[in-house]
Amino acid sequence: MSEVKKDWYKELVVYQIWPRSFCDSDGDGIGDLKGIYSKLDYLKDLGVNAIWFSPLYPTPNADYGYDIADYRNINPEYGTLDDFKMVLEGAHERGMKVIMDLVVNHTSDEHEWFKESLKGEDNPYHDYYFWRKGKDKKPPNNWLSTFEGGAWEYNEDLDKYYLHVFAKKQPDLNMDNPKVREEVKDIMRFWLDMGVDGFREDVITFISKAEGLPNGFPLPAATGIEHYKKGPHLDEYLKEFREDVIDKYDCFVVAEGPMMTTSFALPYITEGPNKTLDMMFHFQHMEADCMVTDWVKVPFSLKKMKGAFSKWQYKLHNKGWNALYIENHDHPRIINRYGSLDYRVESGKMLAAMYMLQCGTPFIYQGQEIGMTNVNLTRLDEFKDVLTFNNHNLFKKLGYNEEKFVNHANKVSRETARSPVQWNAEENAGFTTGKPWFNICDNYKEVNVEAAENDPDSILHFYRKLIKFKKENKVAIYGKYKEYYPNSSSLYVYERVLNNEKLLVICSFKENSVKFKAPAGYDLSKGELIFNNYNDNKIVNNGFVTKPYEVRVYKF
Image 1 (cartoon, rainbow, N blue to C red):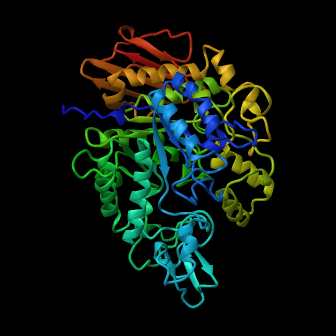
Image 2 (image 1 turned 135 degrees about the vertical axis):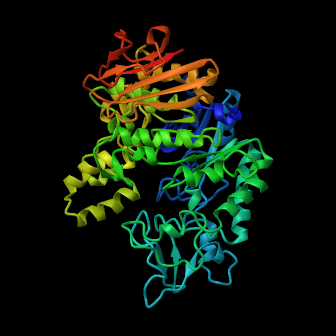
């Protein structure tokens, strides 16, 4: 068997910080860089060796940082460039890499480039964006925005429309303009020269639009997407960024690609001279309880989730590298979705081992390591997100009154995972001494870092042990993956094999008892039980009957 190529980014465990909700140092209710700095030792003790920052840049917050007004500075709500340099240095001193969010499909409409583009066709920045004349008093084409209504916003002064495939305050950059690509490269160099170790590239697969911007096939909330989800020049532009910048630094790039599949991803992440990206985030394993979007709920299907994970494990083996995650700022909390609130600790541990012991670089979202759950909001005006309000308009047409919509949004909105991190049982969960910018989860007195530190059986201590094991054991990093019992709708069982070492990972996704028998070739009595979430771990006839959301990991 050919050996998987070893790289430092494959041996990382990455912690995602959504800065607004992480830790507030100055009492204004908004998380900030000095707050992050104060928690670097906590992250080091957790064992992670990289931090991914969701956008820290100046922004009007139409999409909480994903609408950037200045790519070379820090949002004053979070601090200054000097504060960032302090955090960067502090992370590096503690052996942690730092990656930034790079959001270059669009800017804010308050970015200087866009303000200049409003001055007319003679302005050199006008062609930084997609400005087009309408047709018969209608937009230039039928594309819809994924965030709010049509994808075109009319400007009366210019008698033209600009394209925004997300919110109207997020105009799309025209990457076909070589000057825009040079700007992107300069932005990358600015941060890499400062010492940043790489980028997570937001919706990077959308940056090339079909020539002529033709009409799209009518789809709810996604008309036109076939003309930019993998545009004609995507390969060329990613290669240009790689060759001109990324390859000249010791850094790595993880991309986000909506509607991503293995066949779409592989040409970009396959090891070798043509590789343009190091890893690709996809959403397929997050569609086990929904259709296309989190907002369209269906009953959770373990087989669908396992199928997605296994497909990426098998197809990428010895070719590309997986990015592993079960939570981030774009999805509700995983215990609410795939676990159980009644068995929060047990299911939280099971879910952690389930994804982290697969082949790939694991990403942990803030609060995930203590088993945080969805915040529960009672009124529409407590929500903050542009996507929630757009969906409110859609659901009103489906007959949802406000109460019904709020109940639904509490289950499916990405905002439910954006509540402030729960540090202790004091007021505002120790996040701030002021009024928090967003509601704190009701369970903060029981679910918080301080309580978890003092409980040897907590999810936090489980994550610490798991992270240490993942980093120190090559079988957990590079071992070959194989799934057993793919047709089980209760158990997820897989192995990792490297040379003479084997791991057998057994996860129950049920509250009720399930009979498990070890696969052929395994004798559980000869394995070392290295991870479990119950004290009673008897083996009967080379198997056992599971307890609610039980996990066992044996090493051979």
